[in-house]
Amino acid sequence: MINPRIKVKEVYPNIYCIEELDYKEHCNCYLIVGSEKCLLIDVGVGLIDFAPFLESYVGEKELIVVLTHFHFDHFGGAGQFKEINANIVDIKDKDIGLKYFKKKYFSEGIEVDHLEEKFKIRVEKFKQVQDKRGIDLGDFKFKILFTPGHDPTSISYLSK
Image (cartoon, rainbow, N blue to C red; front, side, top):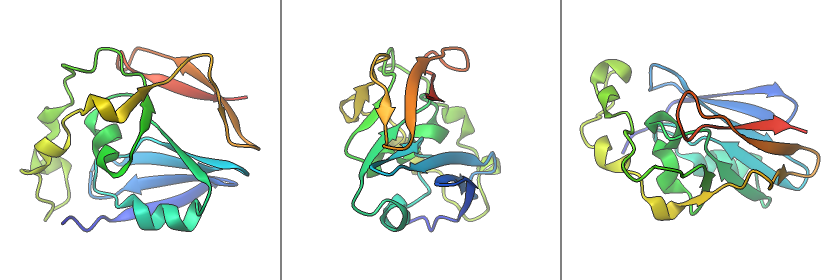
């Protein structure tokens, strides 16, 4: 089992950047702790064990998990969650970035040979986001914008 090393920084009150240090391109995830619900944006490469972290920050609040797009460094940790909201258009045959499975992208001692199976997209786990449906955390509200460019599945979350 991989022992993740993460860095957590509060970038704004109740908004946390979670950085996976074992992936050298520094995959960042963001947790927004609202007054009623919490939002986790992206789930990283899969080296973070989110359970203890989320227990501390989210507690009993509902957690909404969303992706910005389908590159492996943003959805690799999907197996830890029951449901993830994303733009699932054309993901069945998606190139998930297997070119990055080279040790030079990961810290020494991180075994990457077995990770390819972990990064396979399991379509049933993902729920299509709707552009008319915003995300309401209580004191934080977000509008969903479809922003293909970096990837055809890209979406952005605009604070209302």
